Length: 137
View (cartoon, rainbow, N blue to C red):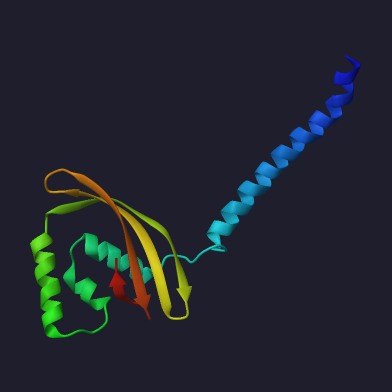
């Protein structure tokens, strides 16, 4: 019984320490995410490109890519028309990105449902150069 009484103050200190560290970690993590301490916030151009891609808006896609020849633009329009109504986006999640000067890479996770009802999940990385999408993988 005497041993338990001797450990009681230490158990209280240990419990208070755990609770304090939990609260500090929760607050610190929230602030770090809000201020993007550990990463780069999502680019508005990348977000608009992804949404335009999922909604099959060729005009927006062309506006967010570097100038190309007429044949390449016509092929983009044709591909968008062919895919119209065949897929539906179920979810879009921004996973993160990095920026080095005018070059930025942003990664997304997309879940789509095909016309057949089959659901697919895939990652998509966009590479932007001076606010224009130069590559998507």
